[in-house]
Length: 239
Image (tube, rainbow, N blue to C red; front, side):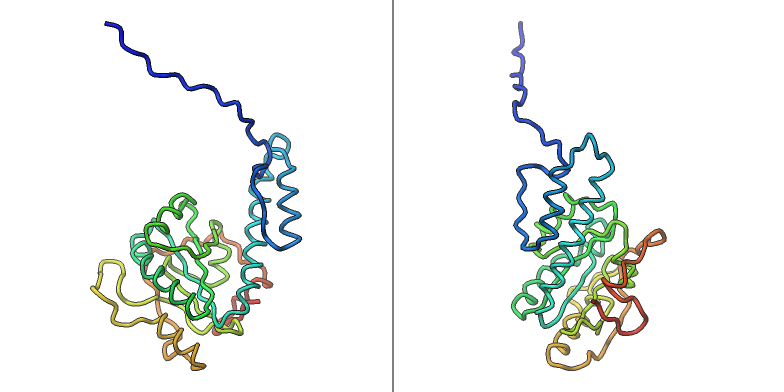
């Protein structure tokens, strides 16, 4: 007996974009320099500028992040938290970060995530954030320059900066999860307590802890320019 052949797909008649940025993609950022680079990227053709895509996209990301940080300067404080869905400990903390994001929004606190693991793809990050209910801005940092400038050591490191962008706490979110252990509830909420003290104008009782998680491999990372953040010892101030 003759078997029915599967229906053949018709070849797509839509023209594929040959520019670094798809021609149908719009830029709604209210920043002249970002818009200029976006338009320039859209005019660059892939067949003529093979090595330009990564450079141009990185410039767009860094400028966009810089604008976001400038805009967040109006906030009462800023939390920067590292994330990595491929790290078991970091992945466990995603729901905690989702709850903290909601808390920060209600309190007028800026909240930024940084993804320092090069093997974590955008698709993996989006899927993990969707499952956890996270909608916060996430800055990709596959080269580790931002993490190195912050002085981060693990995939769960968190940093709290006050309204003057002075670092007042760094380290673990809390003590609920770690390598080889898991508690039903945290005994110490380091980051939340530090934030509460900062918003009340007090110095956090605990200014630094050791964050659990997977150690970051920053051997080849280059620190970000001093204009982005000052990586000195003790309290640091981000420009």
